[in-house]
Structures are given as C-alpha cells and as structure tokens.
Image 1 (cartoon, rainbow, N blue to C red):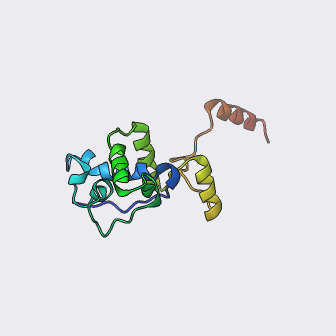
Image 2: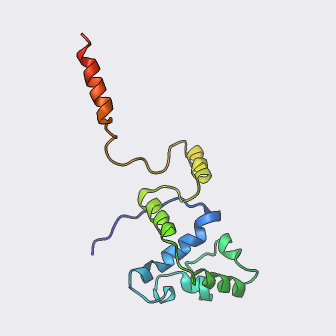
Image 3: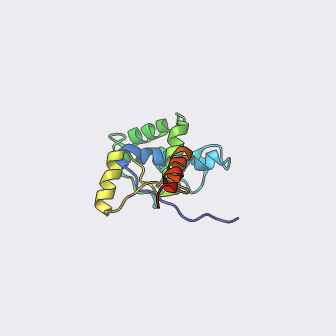
Length: 147
C-alpha cells in the first residue's frame, strides 16, 4: 500500500477543534475498517469518550470544557458522535486539509496571514482566465488601426 504525504492545516480551535476530533476519529468508520470509532486500535476515542487510560492522549482545554468532571466530559463527547456531519462541513475540512488552508472563518484566516506575513488559503487553480471573445475581437479590430 502506498501512503500519501502527511497533510496539516492550522485550525481555529474555538470553532473547529471538536469537529476535527470527530472527523479524525470517524475516518476509520467512513473507510469501512471498523463499525464504531472506539473499535479502531489507534484512535483517541476510547480515551476521550470512555476514559480509557492512554499515555499519548493529552486532553485539550476545549475537551476539558465539555464538562465539570471526567464523566460529564465523556458523556458530552459521546453525544458529539450521535449526530452526522453535514456534507458541507466534511468538504470544508477536507478542502482545508488538502490545500493547507487554515480551517476557520475569514477573520481567523486574516489573523493567520497577519502573523505569518504571507497570504494563506487557496489561490485560484489552473490557468488565468482568458479574455472574453468580445473583448478580444474589439482589441484585434482596434489594433488594425494602429500603425
């Protein structure tokens, strides 16, 4: 099996972190490898949803904010997985991941650009648009009159 290169995207934590957790932990389910996220052996889902000790998983403050204690957080985390992803949300995460575009709203992207001092996000792909035929025809006609 040939593996793709590692891809990453900066994420607006306040808006998208938990959506990214869901996206990542549901990937093996969408791929048909397992029936539920906790069945995938390399998933953080068991630690986040059931409190299974995993020395690699360090709870993020957004996760910790799901509840006042471990049990409340686990219940809230499991509830995140009861709903379905809207197709648009899945596509937005995938597009940002594939292109390296920061995942967040316009203001977040602007802040990233200011910090990095570089334009981020997707540029238009492909060749630049050609001039319309009418414009080209007018330019051609006008150029005949120039000496």
